[in-house]
Length: 355
Image (cartoon, rainbow, N blue to C red; front, side, top):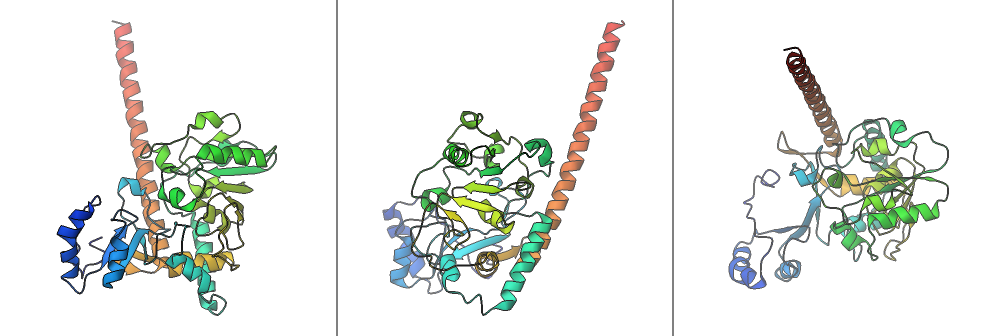
């Protein structure tokens, strides 16, 4: 965060403050400087922080990762390449308006042809590179994982079930197994493929539902394959609120959402939770332009400067290529080491045998 605001003094407050602590230790610090601004990572701050800032006319923003983030997972504390700053609420909170929802509701996309052309070019670039929000998944052959395609193929996108995007984006409290079972019931005869969240696969998040309970009705992907690869040969995607649903829309896939993510309600998705605030029909390009171009900010973690989304995509592609190269080299070294170890053990065994 220091790099994002080099001209400002950044002061971090504890995330678990008692109201009395805020009154005694922090109010005066905020009010004593007319230049003060307050930012809250998701809902880590006090619930009354936003209303306090509104009463005192102090700029306030919620902060969250943008939609093109990094190679590795945020849970591994990888610096983000994009951040969303929202004055109204977190973009995943379906209970009220957000800056992103306002952009999508009122921006004159039809009158901004250049923006739509830019969005179209960016979508094509994202699809050609296979980039996503996180990009540590392996590129493997889905034919080997999925098997021969003999009919409709449905991909169920798992999420971290304790994630705030589900808590605030879905009225009903679904878990991943609920989603798998629904996809199975609604698509008789289809092949159901369940992709657990990368953080669950890597062990940085605990699942609340047991995939073993749905193995009888779906194929559970055990390997953290890239999202782009997992979409190949898929006809229909089910999700609760995952951003992956929007990335499926970019590929022209049918998407069913059980909750109310930012991309639902605009005429592009099969919505199971409706909102009367979203009265407009948008194209995929318009939705992308609002969410990826107009809404977030992008930052080069190497040069320490703000950049446009085009540069962010190219930089992330370079970083992923370097990551893949290092991973390949590490795998080759590991293979050589294991072979050397095997050969050494074999020689020892042979020597023992013929002594």
